[in-house]
Image (cartoon, rainbow, N blue to C red):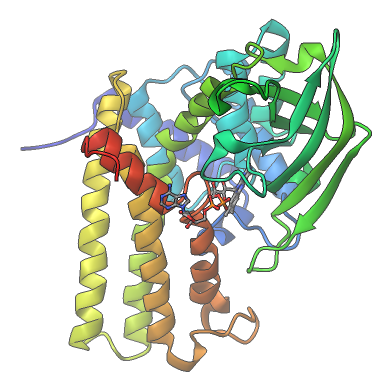
Length: 391
Ligand SMILES: Cc1cc2nc3c(=O)[nH]c(=O)nc-3n(C[C@H](O)[C@H](O)[C@H](O)COP(=O)(O)OP(=O)(O)OC[C@H]3O[C@@H](n4cnc5c(N)ncnc54)[C@H](O)[C@@H]3O)c2cc1C
């Protein structure tokens, strides 16, 4: 069997490569070695904001969207070409994914005409958004959320607390899930509000990742007044919206996950050669196993993408998220082992390869939790894909 891209898809790739050669800033290369979107001290540096705006203005931010939304109406297959090319070169579209990857698609799908107008700035990165779902007692069990919004004639009054809110320290806007009806089944009393982060009564307290950056925060709401027109979708209809938002998040994640694995395996081969253990049978076997698993995941990702592109659901994506994040963790740990005594040195100036393996290992734990933990993904696969009975 011979698999090849159509000529128009190759032409699309050439146009993209020419654009990247001319416009991609040198800083994008520096991101490729690390496991997450963690940009260090400055969470969303100026070069990354400028790059996201450049992509938008040239129709390369979300190529499947129309030009007014930062795209060029390309086909799903061309979107795949785009993602492959970007990830294989280690070029991030943005260092701030909630706005373009979750908020904008949700506003376009569920928002009213005024709310849809907020999408272009979210995709271009002009407005920074955070997503307030998780709470101290509502993470995996999101429907248990208790941040309350009392309903008045023309406004809501919000009280409660969110936690692990990524980018909250830098955000202008929050997509905040609140309980608007405590008297019905817990999935049925949730609503989604758009909350400007400078509204009186909001307090953001940064939380530090193990890697040191303040990538997320606790957000406290005390008598925060939100206008009625900031309700997205219907009152008490928020649960349906949470499902939609997460589906958007998962559809394209696997390409980046697999590319990161492939880059890690290349890095492990180089590392093993440098450290003189490339002939060690145990090291060889473990790298080969990683390679084999990454190649299987890549094949499975394409299969899922085919279903997605044809408009049917792709249960493979639940597995991809879990499998790529878990394999990543194992590969980074192997990198630390091969480095021997340098393995756990986090100091980028003293460690080998600027602490690449240990810092990626730290970030990899977050990848197995954010957007639904590995255990929850396993539950979903067992129940919805394999149709196993509940335990
Ligand atoms: C880097 C990062 C960024 C994040 N960004 C955001 C954000 O922007 N906005 C936001 O709202 N949230 C965000 N989160 C929070 C994330 O969605 C939650 O951490 C996640 O849903 C898990 O919830 P929890 O931390 O409360 O853990 P819990 O739900 O308390 O789970 C604790 C442990 O129990 C396991 N567990 C729970 N229930 C089950 C079950 N039924 N079966 C088997 N095992 C189970 C879990 O897998 C986990 O290991 C982020 C998290 C991380 C790590």
